[in-house]
Length: 210
Image (cartoon, rainbow, N blue to C red; front, side, top):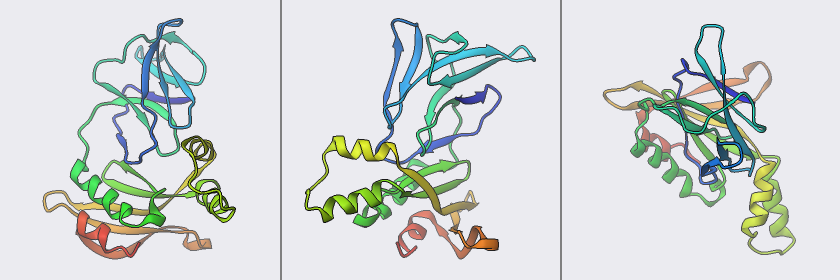
């Protein structure tokens, strides 16, 4: 179950190519539903909080008061892991052009085609696929099975988990400069480490040595 209080204004945007896109109202339950990239359907419900506000909940099974229409000023969000939530529509700190520049830098390298990009607040985060897509595609090709079918890709994607490996943070909003960080998975050093690089996002993404 994924929950987001009406007062929560955090915004997450998806930059990948396998996001769910089926939003409709279930005629049998009069409830807004959304099918994510894994093929899981979520139902939108509402419940009262102690303060008298409404809490909107997306769940795999109908729960709470059915919601037939998206509340005004809200949008459905799906994060890189396929989790679905409802949040207030807010202006993004990252422009569409900047997001496209990062995606273009990734798409320039075939071995990075299965990476995913997510915008969280003032950061752009790049994720790598693990325990699923990367390994399965390698085995598929080694067996001489050719190009995987869309159905096979969808099945593999369902069980794939994504790990954050690179992050670009806004340093100067007016100059549009960013600082690059890479995730470290080594013992006591685990966490985001600075790459000591500051530049405009398009140039920074191209120069990261993908």
